[in-house]
Amino acid sequence: MKQNQPTFLIADDHSIVRQGISLLIKELFFSAKIFHAGSFKEILKIVRENRIDLMILDINFPDGNSLNIISDTKAIQPDTKILIFSAYDEDIYALRYLNAGASGYLNKGSSEDEMKQALKSMMVSGKYITQNIKDKILDSYISKKPINPLELLSNREVEVARLLIKGFGNMEIADMLSIKKSTVSTFKNRIFEKLEIDNLADLIDTFQLYS
Amino acid sequence: MKQNQPTFLIADDHSIVRQGISLLIKELFFSAKIFHAGSFKEILKIVRENRIDLMILDINFPDGNSLNIISDTKAIQPDTKILIFSAYDEDIYALRYLNAGASGYLNKGSSEDEMKQALKSMMVSGKYITQNIKDKILDSYISKKPINPLELLSNREVEVARLLIKGFGNMEIADMLSIKKSTVSTFKNRIFEKLEIDNLADLIDTFQLYS
DNA sequence: ATGATGTGTAGAACTAGTTCTATAGGTAAA
DNA sequence: TTTACCTATAGAACTAGTTCTACACATCAT
Image (cartoon, rainbow over all chains, first blue to last red; front, side):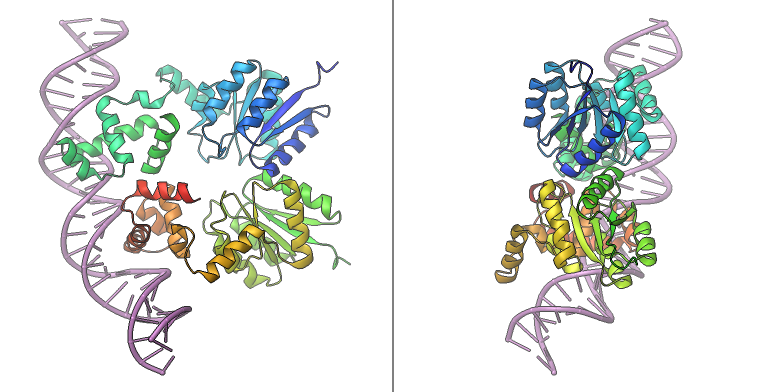
């Protein structure tokens, strides 16, 4: 009877991180069956061929966008729980991944205790979300935010954002659109607010992620 | 007699990575004494108070520049061997760190076997350099032509560039590096000139392309 | 219809970033 | 060993970008 043996899939491109997580899981679930995946292809192969209770997913895969892998996995095995293991200092990406189908979000900088807590919580209740992120979710559901933050932007805002990520300065943009530079700044501010970012580098990231 | 007990210092800001490395070391050196450090401060404290044979140093510390920590460590304990544990896919930074005093360079994406090999090699011969990097060193010494434009940048310039692409403003960078904002601007200009670009978006592109 | 929210815009005052110039130490070439 | 270049740095004067406030118009839910 393998029915009761908990199965895990650790998806991270660094084997050393997989080792660490593996160790934690074994401490908590001595009978655990643990699969490792170092690429998107491997994830899909394993998910197709094995029942997976919990996938721990690093979102820094070099392969590309981890949002897709979440929906792909859910399409194959809707009951697989997904715990995001993020290297980003801030939790700005949490909501995106939770919207995409993950049900837990854990920071790579977390302590061992927090990680254990997260693993247990995922296996018992199917979710793990810190207070910080709960607050964000509340905010998000109250204000009915669309899944793709770019949809929050008005047409003019998208227009400005596109020029910004091409590297144009405020004055250049002002000239192109025949508006004043302070107007461009106002747009820039609103764009940043809506996307919950505060610099150009993040704007470029966001556009790459969602378009 | 502790003289023969090998001592290690694992310096990485992610505890999970430290766990993984720790496990590997214990497999290879059962009597190992292992210290953990999650910040530059901790590194220095440990290096001051303990003999360290081998330091495994992650170069993605949020604290700042890992080049300095190498020379600081060497200043306190010249015999400490340093193995760089890099998260960058390409080894573009390898030469810099080797020049700064490290004697080994290992990629985070390496297999467990490679990591074990690296650890053994560091303890036995005091160095570990892959063929790939040996080739680069040769190339760099023979042709003097940089393989990629980032190698045109001086250490300080790379440091500034990395902060720029993280989205920090000139003043923030000036504060972090304890220099004046005009100095940061000067660096920014030189970086742009060397890479033949003229805006932040292109800088981000260039770094993505070559690292 | 009405008060709330979103959009497109800008002036004025301010702050951040740039440019130009300069210096001192390091290293490499002549 | 002198010249030339590169690196790391900054002051002063300037320009670009931000902030704060504001207003008109559109839409939307009550």
